[in-house]
Length: 111
Image 1 (cartoon, rainbow, N blue to C red):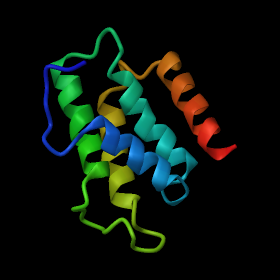
Image 2: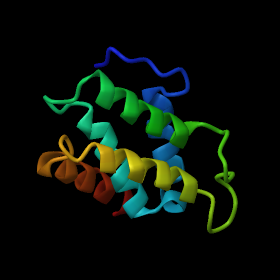
Image 3: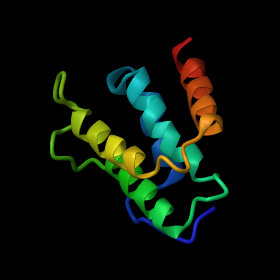
Image 4: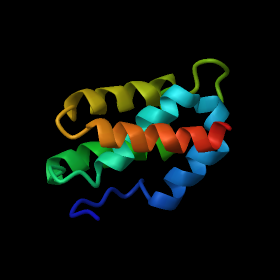
């Protein structure tokens, strides 16, 4: 799937974190993280975009954060800020199809 390898990111760790901490991360935060994940399959997602995506997702799954994930109310705010910055820089590959896939996956978890 990628020419870029990020040491701290792996797909199973990403899915485990999303599923196990869905309520802590919140629906909107998960949907934004999934924007990045599903954007990896976009036809215009090159090495630069993949590096940005994997970096942001690695930060989400990493146990080392600026604000520890288990901190009440603030735990995932730094993760979501990193994801938001990545999304901002990748608006050209986060299209309606990526958004729809993300929305549907979050619905599955919160139904």
